[in-house]
Image 1 (cartoon, rainbow, N blue to C red):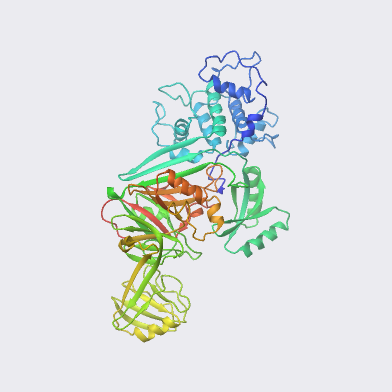
Image 2 (cartoon, rainbow, N blue to C red):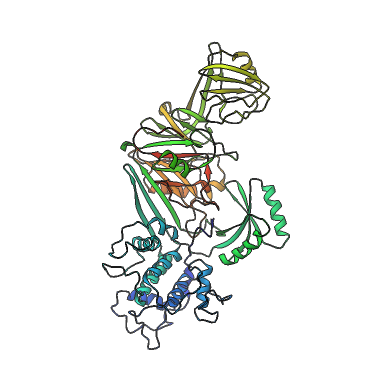
Length: 638
């Protein structure tokens, strides 16, 4: 789902093809041989475009703004209802075009303004922008703003206009299908023939599909490809979000209070968060009216666009894929928090701080922001693996390996040794945990245990039944409860030399894991044992469509990073894990792993987020990220 203010777009409903029988209007006498004859006939057959009284179409005549918006609304198949009032000062509610303008504004095709100028001619640049917007390709307008256009008069156009023209030209099939010309003539009136060609292509896109694929230069060894397939073929609904809770009980409490007032209310579970949403409105305007009312009560409110069922539709789906050639000298580096301590931070912030060419979000994390699953950076274990979920490791030469792994760790003294149960996480009963400076300034433990502070490989202090010890910048803390507490008290007095050895042991006994220096967790494993390995994830995560992030390897060893947008009609619906695995295979991957998805899914290129994160308030802060760093010495963490 997506805030309506951040995604403008529409849909095409196939029911438009049944509006009227093909013989509803006879063919015009003046389009024979015209370059747009086929699409003119299409609009006439569908009763989208009208003939003149003398049964001519007059394709060379300019089209008015009123007629173009009417055609576009009819081509979209949207419900046209009597206007609820005058939206524009120069278009009274009694004006014949008023219902179509009302619909266009309600569904985000047209913006409200003081005047509409219905009898003025529709300019060519405005027509293309409106058509691309109505298709739901608004986000791609920004992505293609710098695309080199084949015209001599578009260089100084505003970026949104340039981007819309680029979308219309590069889509397959193209929306702009005009005779070759040196100039685009953006400020010239669009003719009825040109408008019929554009709107006819719009109709065909909804019925036969549309694909937009383009590449963006990143740097040596790194290539970005954006691909969007399909258009939305059903009506969305708008809801007003009034709360988001980690506790279902709290969400139910708010839901009950709203329902008592007679308002329809829903709870949507997304990424472990219970989101309370009011209404199922047919237009954004209706939802906005309710939002403003609820906001006066002090509730945090967002208007979100959603669908009754994301899983039953063929699309649209939008992907961003990065191919990284590690042989070119670029490096792949997992990172946690700000690179010094575990915390949640946006991937874009980490990428900009570390000077990354590109980045994606990393693995799962818990409600407290701590990583869930393996994290290793430059040979240091930051977080232990979950032995039931896949981990991706990278050797010093960049070779990727995927497997379920477990932590093998021992504390050695000259006279004793003990197994380590975990790293940088909450201490549980009878456990021995290692806390490094990467965790925090203190251990955060309770008083029911013992701790040994180690600096320079030697115990400098032993504390008992106190907890929350300060973690030295040049050392670590060993914290134990129960039997582990007793071992610390008996074996780690001040002055004792201490050595901690850690490694990840592969379930498949893959010896390459002994050479792994970087690792990041996720799961499930994709492509290796069928499309999706069974790792105990819920069907909600596996079998429903969500935004996704994945990491894979191509046959020649290059790395594939993929982000799939979702929950954002009409931009992109997301993928199931089977669909994600098939997409990775289509892009050439022979082995892959799913990373954290949902609102976490983010791709950053050259410091800019190039996908559309699905959370209502934009990009989510995450626990880990995966950076693509330029060739050269690694810059120190901030």
